[in-house]
Length: 433
Image (tube, rainbow, N blue to C red):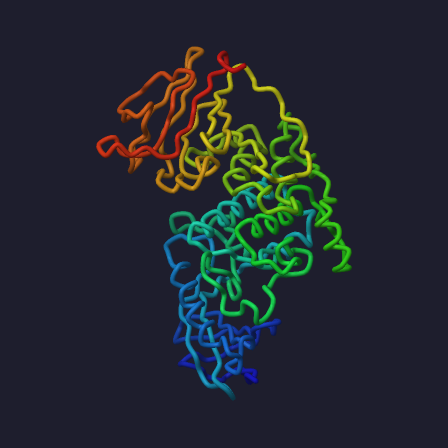
């Protein structure tokens, strides 16, 4: 068994300053290397005695490589190594974020959280999860304690805002790769934040993260966990029976007449069947229809004001959601050839995050792919200058402003190669039945 390190002990050139806490699978310390402080994890599980110990180290190395990047919304390992502390022991080293708290601490003191702050943290969480999934990683243990709130510096100047950062990827999963502990032990999660896949001994997937994210969003935006149950069996029974009510979003009601899209989307996060839960793009679009003050306009790119309708997949049997409202007369509707619907009411920059509602080929779109503009009772489409691939309208490359007509097909591709992906049909207000 790994030995607990004490202040003054040294491992791999790192000097232990303080034991922070002992968790289920690891012991954490604050350590120093010359003049820099770090966060060090010493793993109790897996130990070098289990058959999958070596495979776990290689698996963590791959996860660490995928987490690397600039301005990422998580804390990636800075180094991983093995050192003998009584027995050969696996360690991972992380940057130490000063003056940070976590969302669990924040939610424990709800009186100081303004609606605007709640909404901004919800948007940051969904954006971080969407970006994590693009790396092919499933977090598998999303909960408030694993969401750090770090002071956010803007152009090197400390601000009063905060950045939500995902942490604790010890038992996260690489999509399309079998975890070393598969059939050796269960998949890790946390009580009150388990997904249906966790409690049914299934392999957690992206939609498992959506379920756990939905629970956190309820706590942020509804001020209450939908299954606040201490008994594990009662929690499992309630979640599989889909007993959660739609969230009450009364704190936003004064400035947002229609919160139905966000209520339905958050409620659908808790659907027992993974296929019935929304995507991060669905959540993103619904969250950005809500405003907290008259000046808080949504930014361009992925934050364009738009509404994504969450639809059940073929063969699924979701719990009925509230009936959708009728389309307003000035609303442009985009319909995917296979899946997805998107409503646009104002000038909107449409990029990868919104287009994900229409299928996986959205990965070929840029963060800003094209612009939809209402003008003089008509709708126009313009190419976004930063787009890498062509925006095609009826198979032809979009080179300037073009008036849209009902039935036009907008897609992503390369006209020179005859390549057209992610076709989306335009439905104009007066032409819809």
